[in-house]
Amino acid sequence: QVQLVESGGGLVQPGGSLRLSCAASGSISSPKTMAWYRQAPGKERELVAVRTGGGSTDYADSVKGRFTISRDNVKNTLNLQMNSLKPEDTAIYYCNFKSLFDPSKNYWGQGTQVTVSS
Image (cartoon, rainbow, N blue to C red; front, side, top):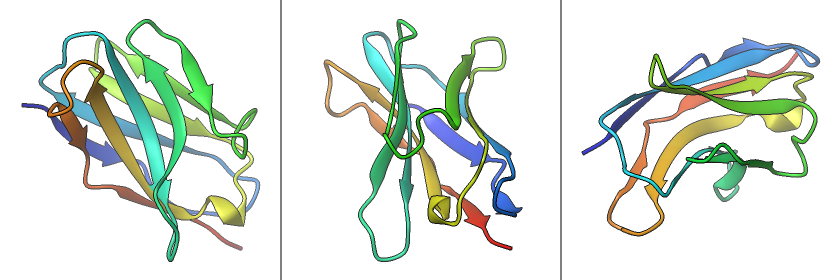
């Protein structure tokens, strides 16, 4: 069983930065993906950034060049550095760990609110 707890959300002005962290207790054997999703009011949840166990990363077009996903193996956290934030980045951000071989091993955090507004 894996438990995920996000932190680091808040209110920031356009152009500002935030760093989200997802603390994981437990682990999933590889191959797996670790990802950040977000859900804005009235919209479906969307993938923001994903990192494989091997270290490959991919990003939604809307955040490329502004967001960076990273893994801290010592602290067992998944991080999302968000720069040049825009009002359209406002959403609840969720951490997700998923096994590529076992669909039952698909874990979500409770989410952290990010609001970009002047």
